[in-house]
Length: 129
Image (tube, rainbow, N blue to C red):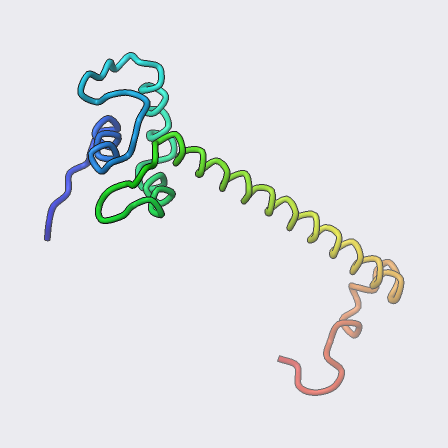
């Protein structure tokens, strides 16, 4: 079994670069105080290498990233995150609406405390499980 070693955040960015991902700076003459480099270090330390690698997967062809830059992958991650949040909020609204309407219908049919009566809920015909 091959043993892998943990890479530093800088080495993780270099691994993306060595596999063809583009950056806004050169790794050959890297100034580690460059604001865009520091931002990329912060990004990979927050989101994680494998999370970003998953979003870069569609661009990974024959062991290389084809025509994609790091900023584009980060933007894909945040677009997906915002979409997931929007869908979650929509589902929460639907759930609240259904709960309200069901509660209203049951309250109208059985009264305000009708849900406490077991006979209103038990299966009257057939076998209860």
